[in-house]
Image (cartoon, rainbow, N blue to C red; front, top):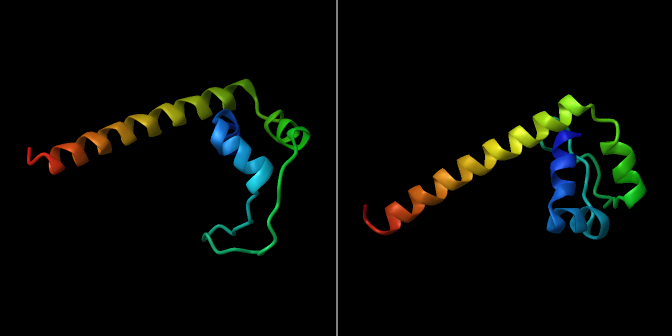
Length: 84
């Protein structure tokens, strides 16, 4: 639910959940259905509204950590491309 919360905070991901939809997967990443599901704003609010304040803080922290890893990877790619 915390990842869904983070996705709902990004405009492109939010729109994808509402319009593009998603499919369900099991814990191994295998699709459990080919049916595409969409969320309504009410669905999303209901799901993410169950998070505690502590879980929201953890979601934000995880997002920041992911961004930092992404920035490091981007710098590594730039250095490799530039021959550094």
